[in-house]
Image (cartoon, rainbow, N blue to C red; front, top):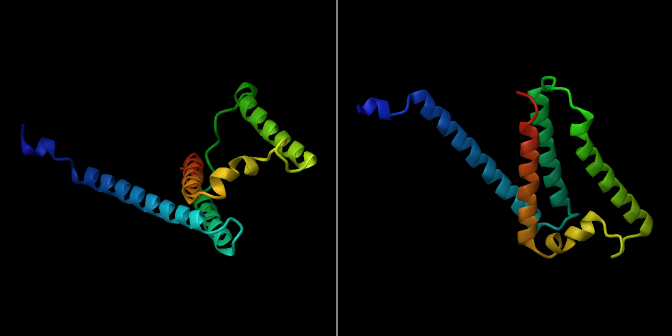
Length: 143
């Protein structure tokens, strides 16, 4: 085999380098944001400013990508599990609100409290998951 057949073309190498640089930038930003969420208290000005900054970035990306092409028709059978999950979570929160915040009817925030409130590592991981899910949702929209 010749050396040329084993060496990838320049365009391929550049594309791979861009993907690697983009992933490194994303993960560096995600770690920094998650560290901010891990060490600043939940309702502090700093953590709320950080959440607004991330949300503003998401809105900016969404606005620059434009509208997604029309998706294939979604059948009722495909939408039913999402609708059921949405209604179940809404019902859970309404019942928790009406029953008061207690152990018999815990809210989602009460259930995640042990992970979030006292453990910076848990808050860090929750921040990473939150950012990864948001990235996944953004990747499903637009070109």
